Amino acid sequence: FNLTVMGERKEFKYEVGSHTWPSTQLLASFVSVNRRLFKDKVVLELGSGATGVVGIGCAMARATKVWMTDMENEEMQSTLRRNIESNGVSGVCTVKTLDWFSPSSLSSFLSSLYSSIDWIVASDVFFDNSVFEPLTEVISTLLTRFPKAQVIFSYQNRCSSWNIRDLLSTRGMNASLIRKEEVEGHSIEMGMIYLKNQRKIVAGIEGGASISSLVFVSCPDGEIIGRSTHTGSNYYLDGVQKTADSLAKWIREAKQELKIVGALGGLGMGLSGAEDESINEEMVDYFLSQHGDIAKRVVLRSDSVASIAACFKDGGAVIISGTGSTTRLVTRNGKLEGVGGWGHAIGDGGSGYWIANRAMRLLFDVEDGMEEANIERLRKVILEYFSLTDKVQLLDLLYSKFDKCKMASVTAKLAVNVDDPTISRLFHDAGGILGKQMRALVRKIPEEDTETRSNVKVLVIGSVFKSWKVMREGFLEGFNMESSGVKMITLYRLTIDASMGAASLAAKAASTDLPLRELKEEEVFDVLS
Image 1 (cartoon, rainbow, N blue to C red):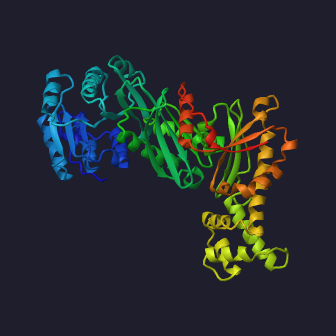
Image 2 (cartoon, one colour):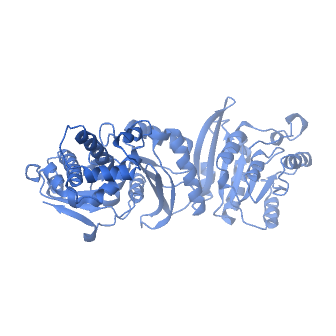
Image 3 (spheres, rainbow, N blue to C red):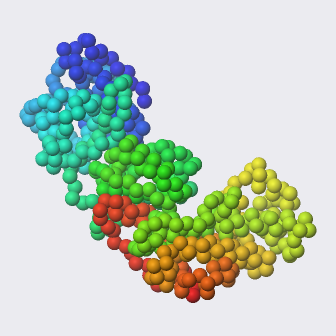
């Protein structure tokens, strides 16, 4: 949003309050980017000065009420009112006197309130260490009366020895740094203040390609406080910073809706494609440095790891076969091993896309005379599904209009035609590919881990496993149990949201644990021995 500011520093005796300081820009920008946090909320601005940029910004973000306060100074308050009028928010903003050094002024202000306060905003109020103690006392009083209010402030770092943590701690409050930035050559920091809370809360995110789920969990009892959903989260598609910014904005809004105040004890993220440790570290560092209000600790792993963490305490494996495919193993010592998962160009063996592509290849190869097979049903299913009359028309979908998900979606139609021997063979071969991947994966189990080798626990995830009956024999052929060194494989359905696994990773990072729900007998998909 754009603000009109009338005040000029030279006009006023109270010069501190009549100048728009660099730290104001950072806080006003935060309000603008996160405007949904302030919509329909009641806001109190401390130290509004003559400009009131942040408070006016909150009003323009559609807050229902903004109390704009500072010490009593008629010239300053008169200019502040003109700024409010110039920006068309007179119906939302009210100017009040609140002198931090005067308990009676605070008492008078509180007695004039007719509603609760949701947000307390303050830019560059810690400009002199002489105000630190009275100001923290004011904030303590406000949070005691309005414990669900959130305090966000920005300040210019003028002296490295200045610190408010002890003053906050003695008054039962904590502070978290949100981010640091250089503005006009000045070092500016933005943070939040909140009441100490004995209840530790962590959050977990499962980020898929198309949809992401978020869960907030209390530690160590495991009570689910709330859930939320969002669009897909893949840093290869959107980049590290854009992905982190989008997730942070989402988490802030979800926290506010659930009235969770303060930084979470931990945030665990299991995101699609997040297997490059260097990129994961880059994103975690960015998250902590730019969104420090979200969580004290952040963990980022792949969605496969989050799924395993949701179901197995001492490691386990997962086979994912949906649009794409991958197999992953977390050993008892926490090491991640993997086979496949390299995308449709060189991998995705046994996946929905692999089956669809193999079916189309067969269609072309048989009609070119390179292979022999009865493809009458296969041709009919493919051409009818894509509303085509000739196989050549598939080339447009395979090249100029290529969409991996769209191409893979025909596999669901093929799956209801597995009574046809040619189509059935495609699914049998898909099982064989997945079996070979699993065989390569179990070789990575440490030799000394005889317990895992005696019964490898594996999650099966993805729509392709709906056709397991025609895939099973191929899987066993590809795996070759007799020479694998494995006595038994127990396959489980994933019935637990993988976001809970991500929350478990967050809890461990926060030096606590969440109770693990044991997989039940009815969740066993198959036993191979």
